[in-house]
Image 1 (cartoon, rainbow, N blue to C red):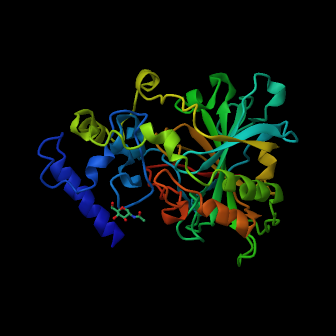
Image 2 (spheres, helix red, strand yellow):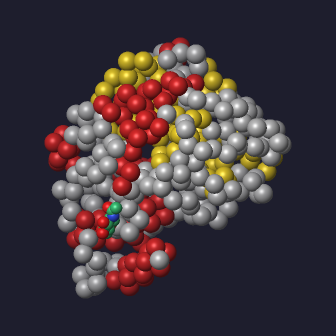
Length: 376
Ligand SMILES: *[C@@H]1O[C@H](CO)[C@@H](O)[C@H](O)[C@H]1NC(C)=O
């Protein structure tokens, strides 16, 4: 039914939105809210039947046209019959024993931990030896966030043989040469994403057995679980007042031509020049940030068996969906407390709805050809 519904919506769009002509007749009532002129106000949603939903992200703003690509969009189903075994380089961490200063904020889409960036490399957590990238390239640990679904058991973004886990944690690293996450994310090979499947303690779980028969060693990620419990609570309410000027105040931007251009260019590529000049949001310095006094380490989140992973060249899983991420998806999950999971589900989004209402995960993407390699 949902498939049929979205087909009908797509059909309606393509009939009525021919280059902006004649669109007023059959426009679904909510559609006017879904095109934005100003990148600072552009808004996406995880509501699949809404015109801001995942299937339409590429139409919302010209800077988001990459979301309509079918080259290397993420997340994907990792089909283990098709993955290719390679003796892959094992990612190497520097300073993994350190805890780096971090803050957490509610973006209006999800809570997000951000590492406070320091100038000196000795205080950074660095990743190198990344498969698919030059061996000595250095990537700096910058961000941690968690995806989950409306359906409690199907919340990870990636899935392995069509099996989802309740959550998926993403650790984001950027290429040191690009200076910061914001600049690196649009650049060729700018990012590395580590995906960790997350289960809920106490829920029935099947042991995860690997192709070679090895069982994953279960790991209760106590530290991560505690951080989730404590800090999701602190950023639970979305401070609408502070964002007022940025939310939905451009709802009639769709009258401008640029919006029909966006639809026409879905799946197209943006020049670096265009991205530099037109696609950078103003820094939102007044967004509420909470200090994470314990600091943060990827170790909080990593499973025991980090030698078992899949890797492929993919994209950001939220707009602008840049195809710049080397994904490393670990085979073995970690576990957090049910309280940690609850706290995440009840964080508010920018519409003041609880995240559980829509979930925070992009549907599986179909690409023309993406090769996934496995380390085992
Ligand atoms: C999703 O969007 C549709 C269309 O705007 C709306 O009717 C529905 O209530 C939304 N669903 C949720 C869960 O918000």
